[in-house]
Image (cartoon, rainbow, N blue to C red; front, side, top):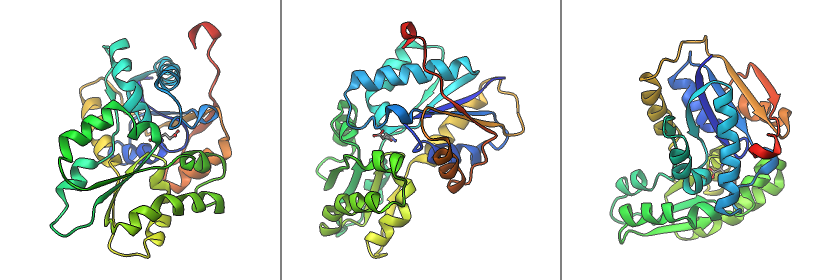
Length: 268
Ligand code: DGL
């Protein structure tokens, strides 16, 4: 049955999937988590594109009519090529919420902090976004190598994950940032921990998940997608229990979690 396909390098995209579920309670949603190949954020464009193709092909074979790239890194490095390769399929991507963060900035505010993967921050697409919206505004870019991987392998609340997060947030805290852009879909899983690290000082965390969900819902409206009582199936090549746990923490109820199959060598 037709549905909306969503993918990420792992559990991070569940933060986007949850926003999509709130917008479309009855749509059939399909989620692919590429945890065995995560993190994407410290890989090159060819790797991320290769994996994005595999996941797109898989979701289309499951009946996806729209693909939501619920990964900033894959959006930055691969979505343009995916659109070229599947011109008949609408792709909805996600990118760091620089524009709303700067729009909300008032005189005297500290710089806008951006937490993202090294690959996202180093991409041409991100540089263009920054050029278009940041101008001379103060933006503090903080690459977070290892953080998405720690969330994947240790979990969002593990001491090692929180140590890494502390190190990534320290420069932002020292610079007096009051707005922090969560530029990786894994990082909203750490929102409470980030607030704790900023000692609950006035802090706005910017996560574009709902804007992405709204865009995906608009796109889906134009397609023949039958209501399906809200079926939600996930596939992972990583730890299914961790995926379930993160999904529950995001308020999602998964109808099934299945192994994400390896494609035949010729299709990979
Ligand atoms: N969740 C992804 C993102 O939004 C990728 C994290 C990773 O695999 O490094 O960038």
